[in-house]
Length: 341
Image 1 (cartoon, rainbow, N blue to C red):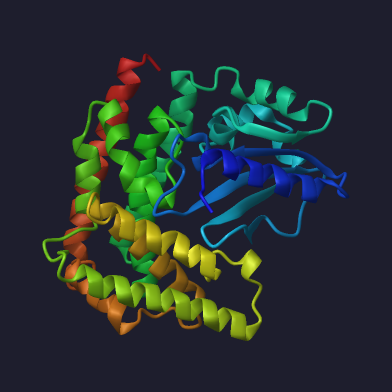
Image 2 (cartoon, rainbow, N blue to C red; image 1 turned 30 degrees about the vertical axis):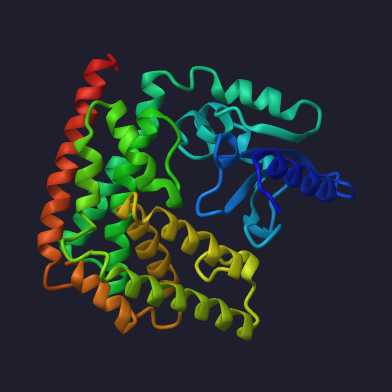
């Protein structure tokens, strides 16, 4: 099957028709994410990002549904009560931003979307509102650094996750000043152009240096890739054998979600090594943390050691993160001055 943006949108419309045929409590459904781009595929795979707005709270906040081996639905379920104070969403970098980025409305009762978008998105891109979305991310990154520096985290896995989260928050501080925040697969693919838009391209390369190292070569990558993909697939099989609910679990993914990351990382590795490495680290560690014991397997420990993210080198990494956060905070100060906030 040849996958195009049009076929993906038709698949989304079909799914929406099936879901709304007998469910009158769905108020609105809109499509956002990669399908708003000219080229939504990455590694021959993509997801269809849908927001389902209901008239009440839902037992499941996020759901994945397979369409084909290469395409799946990624559905966020929200109650309309989330939107009752629309002005507050002007400071929400995720929900507010994706609502205001001209999503495709696939289902709407009584013009709910039209009224809600108008209320949320008025003055949404004013400098003070951009800052309102970006500054908390920078502050959270600094808070994570302080906790790491104080030794708050008592396991290697939790310490490393906090470090990666600080990097993600730092990168999305940059991204949010210029547009939508960046999701996992396209984080380092798009970060460079966002940093360039701020006139600070070094913020992108500097962030990549916080996870990479000289030992990340074409010689070691195939071994890391094999161990990573094997681990994720075994986690999925273990989840299925235990009877766990795959639809409600993000960390232990379904097979098509594993392929979604593995094929994307394989496709971007030669063009953008940090982007591939980021996907490997984040998904591998997130899955580890969802397993009993949350201990790094030996193969992952080798990766961490070669990247100098292990205990022996972690203080040095924290010093690098500290210096980076200083630059990020300086960038925010300059941006505030330039935009008269």
